[in-house]
Length: 84
Image 1 (cartoon, helix red, strand yellow):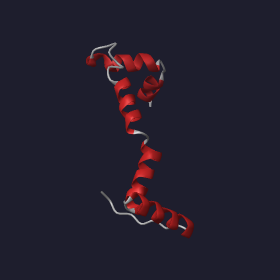
Image 2 (image 1 turned 90 degrees about the vertical axis):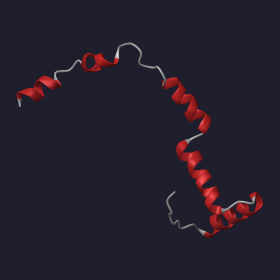
Image 3 (image 1 turned 90 degrees about the horizontal axis):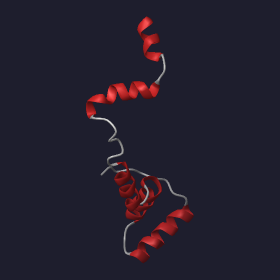
Image 4 (image 1 turned 30 degrees about the horizontal axis):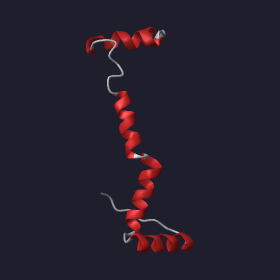
């Protein structure tokens, strides 16, 4: 865990301290929860998203990845880079 310092206006400071008192927690805990919810999203949503990703690419064995990526690109960039 890392320590950080925030500057809060008086209204926000009072609101956070009142909420912390009513929930019997700390302002730091409230801030961590708010940031986690806002920027990391709901844990259940993250878990569901990861489950959707599991097995998403079963079309080709692991050794065929280079050919698959090149086929998806379909461009001439690699040839142009080789000419320089």
